[in-house]
Image (cartoon, rainbow, N blue to C red; front, side, top):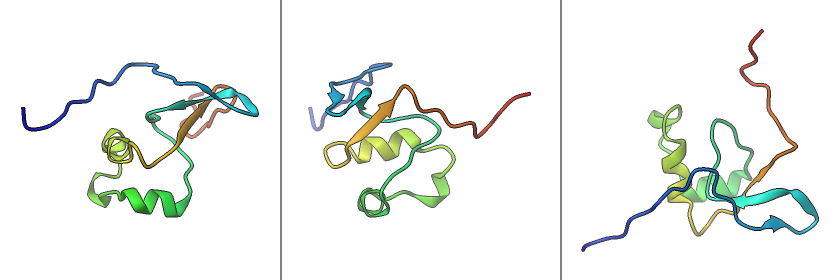
Amino acid sequence: MEGGCMHRKSRGRFHSLPGYPQCSLVNGVVNFFLARTDAAQRVGFDPQLKRVAHSEFFMDGLGSLMVASCGHVSIGHQKKN
């Protein structure tokens, strides 16, 4: 009654980006992202939550960030042998 709610759909993707057919607009990403410093600073990020608040960051950025996920890009930041 006093606010809104957000339904987060797993694997939710919107349309692809023109000129980048393997990339689609999304609400957020998990584990790793690359961002323009000025865009990330506009949203803000609590440094005490830097390892656990990825979802909150992207929820705070809804409507002001353009987020894309590209299926052909991978980051090996925690490789397992």
